[in-house]
Picture 1: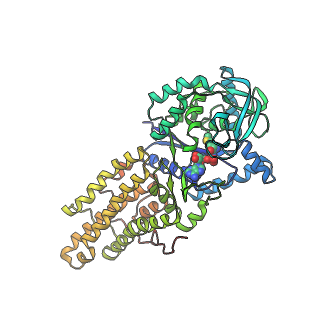
Picture 2: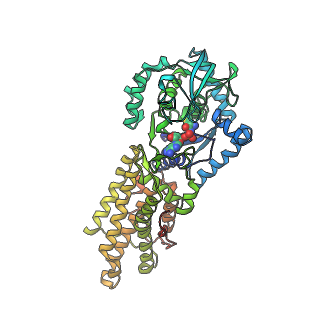
Picture 3: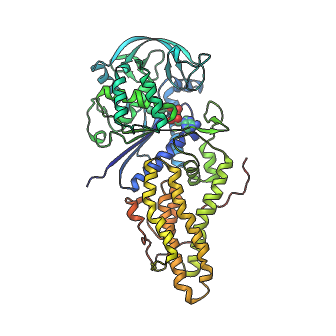
Length: 520
Ligand code: MSP
């Protein structure tokens, strides 16, 4: 039987600067879902990439004394390195300067032109460069600033090509109504609904005052507006227009429509109004869902390069390790709303959940297995009443976890896995294997307790794996098992009793040594 497909995307990031915690946040969340969906048997296609055109990137290049192409070629490897460091398992990486994208984007624009959705006009209005967004006078915030980021805007007057966005208002509203899940979470859905109900203006989709962009195929003096160019990446990456014609076949037909676009809340309108209208205009099906997460705040402010409070992911990975990094962002914040981050909170999470709960459970249990059973997994026991609680939590975990992941509640999913981890720690305390080891009479019970706890650890590691891939792989290895990332039926693999008796357990180094230093 053919496996169901799961196509998941992150935004493509501007290359005006290097990756920071905000861009890493979306990417890690998408990676955790991609990993989990592979473990549940899906044919996953996980896309991320770079948004390399536009005035902002051109200016960054100029400020660094480089040509735009040299500049983007210098920055692109930094994103690739960051994603490698964070163990991101994207299946593809698209750059909008690649021929496959440029050809596809041009083919797309030609279709819109041929269908009568593009026309020539004159644009006079305001432009926010950091957000690459057009605004009309009445849309500006106080003091003629950008309503989104509050920064200064510049006046633009140009002869441009326009897209008939206004013609799609009713069809968009109808789509939102028919597909209540299309925009998530609800707060964002309401925001978009009221924005679109208020009326849509046609959109300027070309620029003539600079050249760093994709030329319009039918008017090469114009380059494509960077947002138009960027949004099309989601289909050019899977082959739209690669041969210059908009055929719907190959990987495009296989993976599209995408199940999810993950975006930050600041770019929800582009993804839920302009993008679906573009697809409607081109006769391409719409993505299933767009999910907007919140901002990471440091000391109450949005963390970004331009406000000067951006921290590099590498710095934190060096200090906490990659798994702990991923864990912190997925556990401590609620995906979908803004959340504050701090080193203090990170140290606290690390010590409580990772060093104390999870790391400690694995260390003490594997040590006891070594000490009392020569490192060999005992026989599968007949369950006693005292073991039933753990078995019940373990049996419930696949379903509970799946529900949380469907809702993109990463924090809740980890909380569910932690219920098993914490309960197993308590079970060891209550059963006191060190006392059971004192006499031959209690030996069967000692073995039963160790098996039960080891089996709980095997199952917990399975569900922790999408977020903490390295330590879960290590725990499975120490249990004498294969690569946890090759699992394709997580529920069946989690069935009780999967740990084979007689398997050799390795003790190994502590997974998460306690961090003693105070927060800075
Ligand atoms: N290039 C566009 C996206 C085009 S997608 C077709 C873009 N790039 S970006 O690099 O500026 O931002 C990419 C994403 O990072 C956005 O979703 C944005 O919300 C996210 N973040 C940037 N700073 C952030 C935080 N401080 N916190 C969380 N995410 C934020 O927009």
